[in-house]
Length: 401
Image (cartoon, rainbow, N blue to C red; front, side):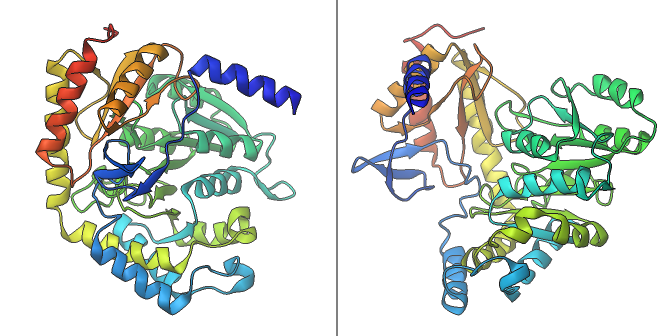
């Protein structure tokens, strides 16, 4: 414990403290309750404002009354609830895959996918781990990095969105090696979208499996919100698509989608699926309704993107540097130094705006940023107050060019 205490003390000094503000009510609404006061929320991934939609809550309540709170254990040992099968069928049709498998969290889904797809399930089958190679974008989420680590496969990290580098590396290992390319569809910290058509072409050319983490794409990308496969017209061209239900869909849980044969394999080869509890029936009931609303109410996405574009335009006019494109409802403001980023975040908090700073080690040194997330239910008045407050904060620091 002495070593741990010493580390945490030095770490807190380095990053300016660790703060977990307690949200007392409303969680993912545009207005949340902190310290018995209302704060504007600009950090939640509840993009489409489905988390607190009365129809979603009612559907979850019905599922709760029918099935109780918890699943009772893993589906393999303790029973396979019908509503979970119903959810998986719903997701498959929504995303555009033959079948899918669900997990309590997106983290578990990523760990399950990578270790099962490229690792050894029984002895050296289906892959000899010593010859297996994973190609991963350097900005991939920590859950993907952990999945790669657990798989024990060799790894090659390619520079963010650098497909020339990726192809060169694939070409070096074009013979006999089991290969897996891992990428996200949407990179919310950087505000950009991967060129999945290019990556899919490379996967096919070099006989590699392709996994896409669509956590921030599902519900947002595609005409019907089906995510990356719909947006890029890549049905049947991606081996496994991972999605998260705790962002645009407003709930909690993760899924893996793919061919019927692959999902059948994952149901027995995924350790988090076999040895851990399934997602709860109450969550499954809410997510079925959430997907239904997402598909039917297309204007939610239109209104959301209009609001995000408005914020980006105004903040750019103020001299802020925004990362990425205008194709997602996230506005990452590059501030630069950790100190300046913390100053802005604390100023926003003093003005009743919740938007934590993102500093090292979450991002590289001297690339600290504010990740402003817009939700469907944010009003123009709330957006204007955010813009006005950031204009005031602009004078407190020197922004990186």
